[in-house]
Image (cartoon, rainbow, N blue to C red; front, side, top):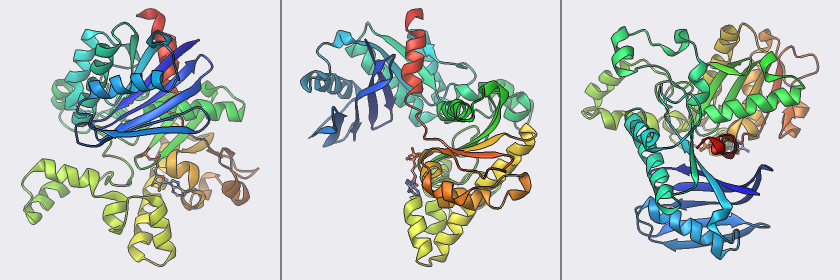
Length: 398
Ligand code: ADP
């Protein structure tokens, strides 16, 4: 049976999962952290809950890949590298070029690197992961799966900005979205749960984790999404501000004396959102705890978080002209019944209502009341799984 490895390479980390295909069984998974630094952490989980961990210096992605392949043999997860028939790479920005997953050749790799303008940290790291695998296992098929591809179906009216058109034409300044594989996956799982074809449904998918985005999915296709040119836009998140008035940026730079725009965008990406408003944490569990103990900043952060998501969901009722279901997924969406009810309970005018018993009890399934016109679903996401699936689809086309 084929074994496929999925890779999610960051600038200093490499997450991976080894699947047996086509039955989609996870044989092992792991993460290499602190690549490029001393004392990198190399972890593998496999078998029946076994764990292998070493701390060693891994200075480059090449070495991380080499170590992970060696570990697969050493831990007897595979007996020969030949068992691995494909590798799939998660790539953050596909720009206007990649509207679906592709087999990676030299030309594709060059284009992925050129798209680093749109996601500077991510695409360069993704490319490093691709090159590392090509070096160590040159003969296996390599597939790129793009975070943006699911949103390639957005109409121009949704993806263009109200700015001079040459900025779009010359510099591709437009909305691209993100979390595409997750929105795609949960939309299809929602259809299965509702016993319908996804092509017959209008869905609003809410991926709410540390990063968060909301998507309007019409008949299986994304027609609008809250993240935009980069993942900074849309709803307020763990550390990202979400939407704000662009005029605020020069104003704040002048007032604070920050002269480097990179420093300012870093603040909006890493020090804002739940963390910035609460001054406590970017982690929703800690915000909920602090709120319970009466911290007013935590209460405000929680309320703003829910408010922004609620407003995007309301927008997408208009974009879709009504929806069959709202789907919650990712760390917060899957686990926090409190956030879900906070968002939905103020939207009953839309004909949507949560059954609190189901909301508290269910980790997966329908949590709306019997007579709710719009269903509410909780679906655990599995972004990783879309990668080996696409490798399987494409591996005979290399
Ligand atoms: P990422 O975007 O990093 O993949 P996740 O999807 O893992 O993020 O979501 C992480 C978030 O989920 C954190 O804010 C965490 O506090 C939150 N979370 C996880 N479990 C719960 C829970 N039981 N209640 C509330 N929030 C939770």
